[in-house]
Length: 176
Image (cartoon, rainbow, N blue to C red; front, side, top):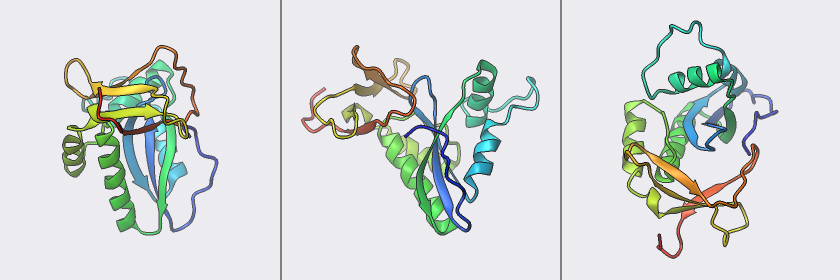
């Protein structure tokens, strides 16, 4: 579910979370924290000034542009674990999984970039579905025109709303 979770931080637990662009429904960032509410507030905090610059293609740059445009990112808790080590492994696992599904992640750690680049070879073999509706393909995942990432190309009759849950899974028949 794409929403702002209403659950309280569980003391001593670590949360792996995703940030989604509500306009494209793409996952753009995966993070981990020991205090989800605090970290979410940090992401939603307006940039200090318009003159503040962040590296192009970074989550901070995307968040600053979104804030100026009045776009509110969507958050999803992916996993909750007990230790920091498990949390770091969880974050890497989800980055690898979402990159393989063609999501345009903005994670910049070198270790994450390796996972993202490794996963970029398979998205064209993916389809998007609603949970439980495996026969109705909603979108195909394909490289962008400039080969700078991947996009979901939705069928004309598909309507996606905030809060919809979509799954990106490998194609079963191997067809385009």
